[in-house]
Image (cartoon, each protein chain N blue to C red):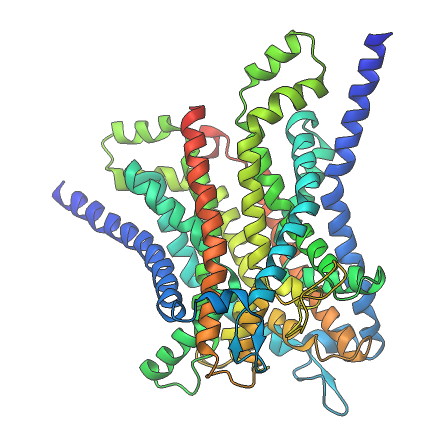
Amino acid sequence: MTLLNRKTNDRMAHWFFLCIAAASITALTAISFFLFLEGIPIFKKVTIFEFVFGKYWYPTAEPPDFGIFPLIAGSLCVTLLSALMAVPLGIMTAVYLAEIARPKIREIVKPVVELLAALPSVVIGFFGMVIVAPFLQNTFDVATGLNMFNASLMLAFMAIPTICSLSEDAIYSVPVSLKEASLALGATHWETIIKVTLPASISGICTAVILGISRAIGETMVVLMAAGGAAMVPESIFDPVRPLPASIAAEMAEAPFRGDHYYALFATGIVLFLFTFMFNIFADFITHKYRQTGEASL
Amino acid sequence: MQRRKIVQKTMFLFFYTAAAINAAALSIIVFFVVKNGWHAINWTFLTQPPMDSMTKGGILPCIIGTLSLSFGALLVAFPIGVASAIYLNEYARPGKILRLIQLGINNLAGVPSVVFGLFGLAFFVIFLDMGVSILAGALTLGIMTLPVIIGSTEEALKAVPDTYREASLALGATKMQTIFKVVLPAALPGILTGGILGISRAAGETAPIMFTAAVFFSPNMPSSIFDEVMALPYHIYVLATAGTEIEATRHLQYGTALVLIAMVLGMNLAAIIYRSKLRRKLI
């Protein structure tokens, strides 16, 4: 009797914990549901094509223009430029931590990267605004220091910790036997890193890069404060831009409740959500499809 | 032979520089905030509300707002996060359900912060009619910090050796008893570290509370969870971009930023040091 009870109890506990663990999925579903609920009505006024590829974003003009193409272009340019800085720096730091640094230095540098990840985005945005912007303006003699380059630079330092710590995990989990084999064949430490260790951990590094870029696309405060806020397709890296999250954050407070502008901002949120969602699914796909399984992955 | 050594030396120098750039970035940001912010910090600044349309006075309401929002977020995220991690590490068997849940958690972690803000506005503020309030903000932040708590709890549970579980089961304990009396106590320090990281994450976020909890200025301290509040990150943003006297309040902006990073980095540093001590003990 008691034995039976214990079994049912364990079963119930299993189901109980399963239900709670499903909360993340529930939350994700609820997020997409409410985004669509509040965003879809704008497509009664403009078609999806006009919304995504429309060249003008003047939501408060009469009649208003709801074309988010300049915002999408702003987001993509800022993200691409920051990836150009963050990807090499992040991966190189990861290699340094996993392969080169002595344990003592590693114990100092690793927390530094973690603290960099912990810096509130508003502080980084503020720093970009009050320190980096005047510096850029004076050094490069540009019209405004609040521009694409400034925002990309700040975003890069938000993406580096993600890229670095995930890549480091991947590099760290390459079996020692592989490296020893390479060294025993007479390869130098550097040759081993570039020809054995990195190729063996490439799937993990790809995941790291994708997640880092996804973090940069969605980051709000930095682009809100340091990107300049002009809703136009940039022509140089010193042009001000208005990426998707910046537009949402800056305009939501003024948009009349459940007016067209409000719906358009939620629709912008849908686009942003879909971007990051795709990146995350892609990262997950790579992780599981090309899972590192020792020697087999080379 | 000589050439290969030189190549190696040069390349390693690059890698070393890359790591040094990160350290430099962190130090430069912290340096400027501390250098320009510490003048602003005094007893009045920490214990008074803002005065003269936010050009003088202190930031007490923001500190209280941020504390209540981030602890509120923890109250939401901690139980759900720990229970989720228990499922993932103790109960789940590899298969479709586990895969789906992990996919959900990874994607939740990747949702942009401003989208959490939109969701909080649509769901908590409007649909559930909570209004702009601490409750709505804390719930939004709670959902956002859930993946942080789940991740660190999972790590803490994984670090408990299987021999602990086997010993307990061999003594005739049920799985529940094993989890609550053996596994959780052993993993508790690691789980609490995750809680600290969760609070600090919630304290530093701005975008999720912009539409759900935070206001420019409120004359009164919040008296219930249905009140709107001021918060440190939002205060920095507002003073730096929308205030009437942006230049004149610069020292207040730096001061607020200094208080915020002292809180956030302090908590993180404590968690990091504590965790490295724990790891040494387990090994």
